[in-house]
Length: 83
Image (cartoon, rainbow, N blue to C red; front, side, top):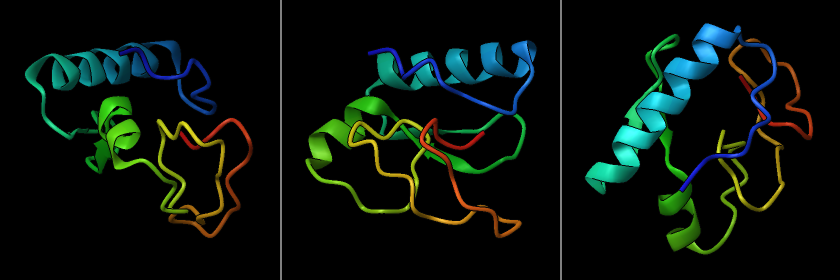
């Protein structure tokens, strides 16, 4: 399962690292991975799909298109998700 391509605000090398971490987590069947840049735990697309509904926390790989949670610096998350 490939996450959406909209990962704004990160460099191409960071994007590659995120996608690699996501793919490894998906293949291992685990619910998420540690973001290579921030150290935060990020839920996978498969986990979020199995969850079935949006939690409203602005998950990076959200399938529901809802991005309402603030970032750590208090900025609103846009329609493309957070970085």
